[in-house]
Image 1 (cartoon, each protein chain N blue to C red):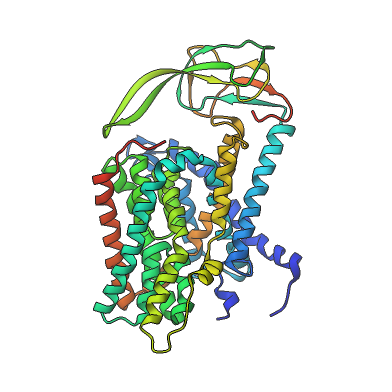
Image 2: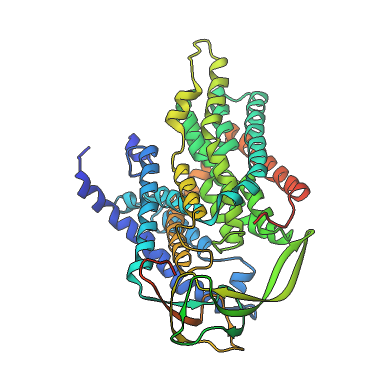
Length: 369
Length: 131
């Protein structure tokens, strides 16, 4: 393959990135304000109040429209490099979310978050390993699905696949299944949350526990409450999300160890080597940002400085979510099927519903901050 | 399909992407802080929530210190108490976040304010501080 050099690589990113930024600009500056004033069924703002449509959901839907209709199912070559910056924007946004917390606030909900997440992550992984055996699934497929359903969707499935000798097609089907499930929950959850009168704390905890993908957790929380501030759904959901992302290397180790234990030519896998290669170090940036916030270096709560910072954060996320939508290929999701689909649906729905029951039973409406 | 084509990142690996995200967020923070502390001479302070302007504690030309009261708003406070949403009207005072001088008073008591819309006070802040 031709080496473009650094300048050429940056230049290749520009067209796709311009589409993502331009899309978000039109949605935030023109479409969202218009929707707030639009009269539908005789009610002003019906689109926003009843359908919960805001720039977050619109960004994802527009991205899906580009990919599946405008581009005919594949991001064109001229835009591909730009759209591949999607995860960079989401990770940058997640790090900046660290500015919503101080360490004392994290400690207040950290215990609950860690308990719930660890129980659900390992509980789901163990359940999927058992279910895969019951359904007679291939051990590689079972291991990949356990990682995908248990911890953090795509990242965990990709991280586990090489260690358990998963075939590319198994990995693709696992990812398609959990992304398909995540998309469904992303659009359904805000309605369910409002129907059950969940508070921001309960909604963040539920979605952070029950939805499988980081980008989808953030998008769902922001669809429920689009504000970036302490005490909002996204502030709580992100604590759950970060705890879950931190579990990735441990789950990868656990599942890889399970896989090789059942193989004749068992190889030695150490937790240390997996931590070294799979630890998601962007989480350190999140903790660093919380440290800056705790030391009041980035402006006082309620200041115009923090207001500007959160506005920039909203743009960073919005750009990433246009890209997230453009990575949702309806044909790939339709292709999901067979055993991975059955395992994914059973595990995903169980986790989603049990998480809701536990949240309603044990998590109070009043948040910790 | 090559590995390059399947990759979801423009970077060599996820680890490189993580590092880039840390640098990108650090850069954004530095740019915002430098912009607010050294480039923006004054800021228009807007209501941080919907409410009715009750009182403005400063006048044009007044020097203010960080923590001095600027204005008060009558707001509806919503809080979950024992799993029930409680709403009560309260008057909250809002303070200066940095030392500076009041350049202009734009609001007047009785004004109904929307969050982030109308400017109440324009404040020139000391260079190097975060308004």
